[in-house]
Image (cartoon, rainbow, N blue to C red; front, side):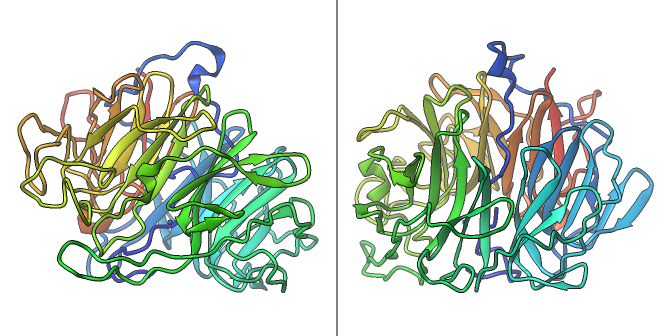
Length: 457
């Protein structure tokens, strides 16, 4: 998952849950251990350095397959314990000890998303790169999940950046800013190729188009934004897909910011699910504001994480007003296939959220926010605001705070992943950010630049 607008590193997104393998939440067996604790595991790998003077590095996404975690992003070195390893933009490690494996694809550019084959034998990487292990590739590649060698029979390629990958039903869904897949312009921005060969067989044919053009209450025009698919999130049963990005028309239906699609036998179809709330514009500097979306473990709820600062018009468009709309908020919507409205909203007070993941006890939201429950404030804590820097866990029932481990804000938490053991958070080392959760003595836990794991209590 990739996020635009990060200092001067990139220009332009990453679920939050743009993962290819759907994690099994602890509630899948019907019992949840409760929200994650606030004591961070000490054995996790981390980025090296403080991320200053233009040297910001970032883990953009992690997925787990079997006993192994796969991490991708923009980095050159990884530290685990007392050892430092050279790793270019992709590496893997033990999900229980943090020890790095020998998997080292050596990608020459940023990797925004990773997905795994059902048998964990093949890892698919998507981003903005041209060589892997010295082999010429074009922004998407399949590599052996143990050796890192390029899988030659997989021949998919795109003409521009890939921002999200999701593997489902023997297909690899690819989203990004590209306008050509395997040399064909038939499926721009979003396509599905066969996991084994990379061939596009026309399963996705949505004719995605449009971008956001509007003026705010002061007559200022929206910042440039280009059509793209930014992020994807597969439902727990693998039958529906959430897709976020920049578009106004998808499959002949009017859609902005997000749409839901049904994975039918022969083709992907746009679902009726949608909310009029997604049509509202946020600040002109952030026309694409719905950056993260995810599912509850039972698939009944869709959670959204947004940036956007404040609405461009109407209620909440002034900093002194009560917050309104979906800009800079965590929210929950029913996933039923009809026009819907939010069940609850929790406002940060004009700070961005980028990612979300959920178990049955909490929905976890991450970004570079400073507060939660901040409906009365904007860039300052209003009445009732709670300090919750970097992440927060909210009640699925009403959006109230149920977990508040805190983390270093940095640029923001780009992705979150719930597994049966706890919550994994992908982030960066900007401004020296390396704090996440607490130690057993209650002090802030350091040493978590880029990766943090919060186990269940």
